[in-house]
Image 1 (cartoon, rainbow, N blue to C red):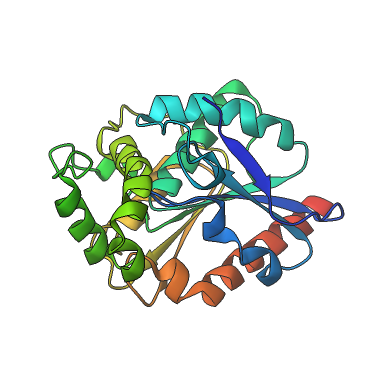
Image 2 (cartoon, one colour; image 1 turned 90 degrees about the vertical axis):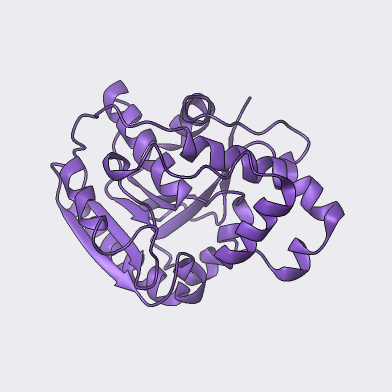
Length: 252
């Protein structure tokens, strides 16, 4: 099963490629507006896992190992320029794990890893309630409480029948994941959090700093778990600022 890496804007003169990893159930469309909002020296790309959007007919992946096995060969051909990773929620965990894998393979390391609304792997509770096996109605109610899916989508049974398999699989990737230790990353890590997000709040996000030797910083934004949308311009400004500084350092 193959993952796809989609170029959102063709910017051959850009100093950095930014690969964006969506939250559970998300796809390339999560980041469709980023190309117009990011400066010209950043070339945005987005990760598309099986089972959604143009890959709706393919079975989704429900374990972290399978996701990584699909991602590594898809992304390595595009790492021929300085690159950075941004992942939100589930996407943050996947981006961190992929960074670990690439570093172990000596296949490259991002200039910066952005983990957004994502609890560090070493603080995740393996006994926490798992939602990926919930009955449809319960899972839809949970999605409604997260305020990320439009009500018109949640209320459309035929559409939800198409979307739920990928959402379940993505939740299973996160909920069945177990942290078994990892080598320190070489790259800097920036964590983003929402001031009203209980699932990945200010108390736990600094522990991302334990996982890198490359430096760590934290930025909080107003909003809940999906501040990525509600505070989008501020998030993009922070990314642009940090990657702009990185690009200037790389050019010296």
